[in-house]
Length: 196
Image: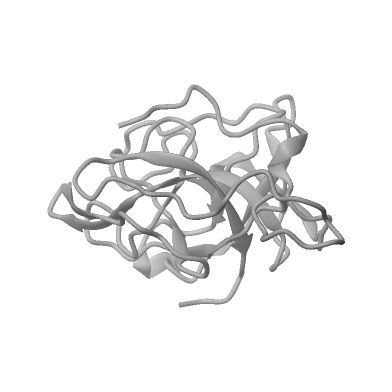
């Protein structure tokens, strides 16, 4: 499994210019951040300049999971412990996505080997995801608890077929992932706040 020291960072995180609906949240309501995960194992920490896709609110079904608001961290102030999160639907962002598509007990049992445009992506607090990855293709986590819908796989701006307005594309969409090993790939995701 690939592991990343940080979430995707820098200006390339945003693949569309909007929409923007920025709201402030204390870090303890964002997950999977710190120990805000179902197994208590520290997942990732916030740092200004990193842009994880996160769920906001309850970790348990009793607290509203999986109908959480989801969004992407725009900035983080460590002094106030406040993160600015863009919760607007339809913004396209780049984020690491795991190919895990199903868990059996505590371990992955299926992997998506040929994802297609429009497939759903979920905020996943499972320990099987490496540092810097909060998204997977699995509708449930390692404990069998439903994951919040984060969005859907989408073309990045340089992955559209050639046409006069944008010029020649530089990358062809169509990643091939393993069907037996966990992998994480930098993908474009169109965020949504529609509940499953």
